Length: 382
Image 1 (tube, rainbow, N blue to C red):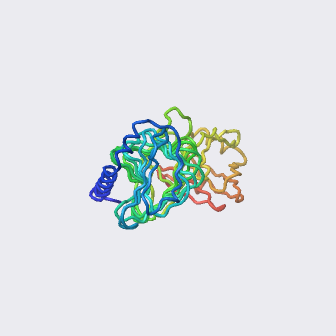
Image 2 (cartoon, helix red, strand yellow):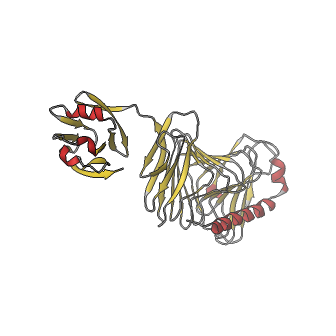
Image 3 (cartoon, rainbow, N blue to C red):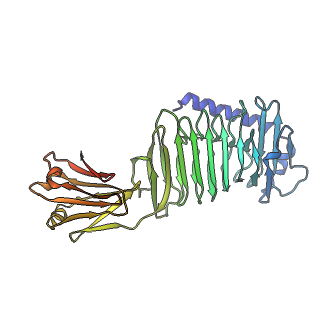
């Protein structure tokens, strides 16, 4: 995990380079940005090479941009600067060495990535996408961003919303993927699917990550250090719940407005939102039991002793959980005292049994009846 000093170094470098580029911009660019443009401009980034260019020859309502190619491709600068307030930009094509910069004047700009690949080999011009102001990135199709240093960053406490129905895969070789200034917020909405891969802490977003109803964020932390992040639902009125894959929940539950998740080193973790599932139930000897499903595991928690005794009075005690391969049943061990029954559990892998006498103990703890690969294991848990 990066320390404060390294975070500050990246932030100061990004700010200094950004201010240098903005100051160097011709006056005519700033003059044209006084017009709040909604006219979309399409920029083929494949055509941006070793020559500087812009679209400011005529004053129009077209969103303004400037491309700066200064010095050597590796140790110089290759920067596409977007400058119109409320500007509407669509990027297409591929470019192996480019920084897209949403400039200080482009407040509320929308940048659509339409099946692009953007890489960066620049040593002193970090990131492939950086914004100085609040902006929206709309995804169409499959898009890829790759960088040595933080792939996507914000400065001046700006925030970013990623929307649309496309996909974005962002990778960083030696740093985090998302590197946001202290008050910067990341929001993923619509049906956007974002994947971030890094060799260290993937997410350095400290003021919150907001996930919309049908959006998702998948991360792969190839480093050796685990880290945590807090997520909030993007729409306070929505009725969806959290859907987690390979995530360890540190606080909150699947129906909470916010959750904190542990991202373990070496694991691919997905955080998403899904519609709440109606109560799932099975009936055992006339007793209806609710259960939940988490990561494909059917989970039953029995916390009513009278209901358990009624279940155990039947001639056969069968938990039919066909449709699932893995099952967890949690129940207080002491409630099986003096009971001599066989519990049968049916799954897609077959039928397995467990004796109530092996479940019982006087530890005062709950027992977890765990079924994996059609085999039963028992564990004491609090």
